[in-house]
Amino acid sequence: MSQDPFIARDSWWRIGAAIAICAGFVWVSTIFLIPAQGMKRQIVGWIALVFFGIAGIGLLPRLFGAAERVRISSKGIYSRSWSDDMIPWQEISRISTWGSRGKTEFILLRLTRPDRFPPSHPAGYSSKANALFGVRADIWIGFTLTDCRIDEALAAIDRLQNPVEPAVQSAPVRPSFGRRRV
Image (cartoon, rainbow, N blue to C red; front, side):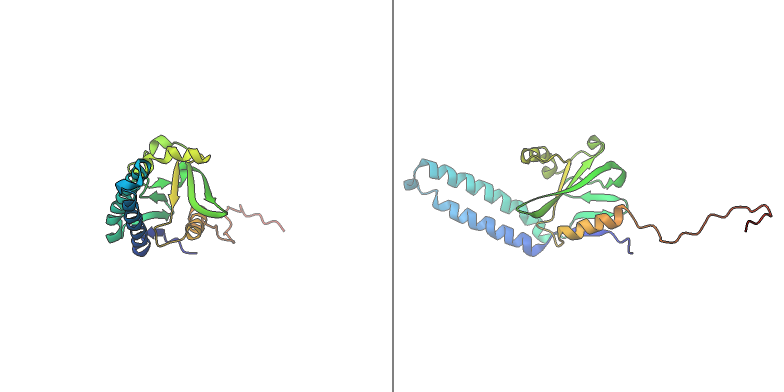
């Protein structure tokens, strides 16, 4: 079986679709900014305009890059949304999944010593807020805007975390001291 690393990169068409959806919400939110709509609707319009505008602009650099988002190798797991360091298998105490409506959406990593791998990207700093969903995990890894599916990543974890031992192993060489048992 191959020991090639699993690599998930940004998917330009998925990111482009997300930017188009953000632009659509920005356009719709401008309708709420008309003064005749009332103060509450104007506030909602401004909140939507700012939120979806920032989200769309934040996705633009990812549209033109082909950066690795996730790398799973025999050394460990790297998630660009968390930090710039690879987390070795020895530091991962538990791997699980989380999803909604019966669909798996995230891979969750629980670390033995989370303080050794602090977040270095904005998504990493918000990971503690994920406890609001009732799930305790140190690192959440999603594949929504990548060119790979989560089931491919789970298969790579199974393959690379616990490499298969050969079915037949040669016996260790022992000295016989000239005696032979029959």
